[in-house]
Structure formats: structure tokens, C-alpha cells
Picture (cartoon, helix red, strand yellow):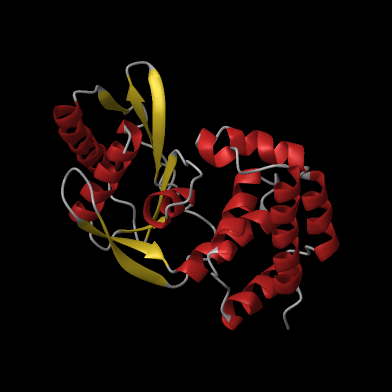
Length: 245
């Protein structure tokens, strides 16, 4: 386990220890740290269940966790608290630095997506084990499909995450497919529009993004044909999700 992952785990466990039901941890870092996805994610996305705690309190918890990691590993991680003055509600992002280098982001920005069903899982960290609240597997898939459908810019990382979940036999529940289809219709998004966006995600662009996010040994198992197949898997899932009555 590297320094960044050790610190991410410690920060998450410290936050959930302080606020056991305060957040739902979402995003690609859940797949990396709990589901062993090879794709590194340097954002810890925490969606507040009700009101986000005060910025000063959150910074103190994150700083304490980093101090514990520094003591164990002999590193120099610190939270950049330039936003600590008075950030807008639901728009708090804390950058974790090592010296002058940014390492990861702790993002408390309130999301507009459908978190839906959640579950509680145990996470190991340098601070000891801690229960964390995350979406169910199908809930994670729904959030990632929302990103593919509704973001203005299609990210290769979201496509990879959808492919990863599907490859682990994660599927949407009927009510989730229905919600996705109805939300797409409400926003005026046509299947053809999404397919055109996926067509613009070439295997070359997919692989270029993947190279920056996965270990070299994992990247060696990918080529243009496999990338094309992953994109096609997501395209098929989008078609089914948007056309569900």
C-alpha cells in the first residue's frame, strides 16, 4: 500500500469515525479502495446526508488523520486550508499536499446525482478498522451511468468505471433503470446523442487516459481492441438503460 492510499484510507476512517452517518462516500475512489479497481482515483468524494459540518471541523479531522499517517510513515502530508474562511455551503474541497506537490482532494461538494441505496462496509486503515457508508454496487453503477449520460464532457475514467462494475457482474435494478430512463427523458437526452459522444471516445483516447491511472503491469493487458470492447459494453448498457419503460 503506497503513501497516498494509506493517507486516503486514514482520512476516510477519521471522518466516518467523527461523523458515522454524516456522509456517503461515492466515486471512483470507492472502486479503487474497496473493490480493488486498478484505476487510481485521487478524489475522495463525500456526499453529505444532511448539512455539511463546518469547514473548520472537517479540516481539523483531516489534519489529525494526516498527522497520524506522517508519524507512522515519516512523510510530510498536510491539508491546504485556504478555503477554511467561509466557503459556500456544499462547496468545500480540501487539497492534501506533500510539500509543494498535490496528492489528493477531499471533496465535500454536494452532488446532484441519485445516491439511492447505501450499504455499510468495513475499511482497514492505519487508524484501525472503521465502518464507512457507500452506495450499493448497483448504486455505484447508477451514479457512473449518470456521469456518462449527463456530464457535458465524457470522461474516459467514467467509462472505465462502468466497464469495471459490469465486468464484476454488477447490474442495475429495475427501479434504477426506470429512473435513469425517466431522468434522461426529462433532460431531453436522446440515446443517439449519448452514442455520438461515446463514438468520439476513441480507443486511443481511452488508452491515453488509462495509462495515467493504472499500474504499468495492468496497462500492458490493454490494447485498442480491448478498449473498443469496453466502450461497446458501456454503449450497450446505455441503450438498455435509456429505453427501459
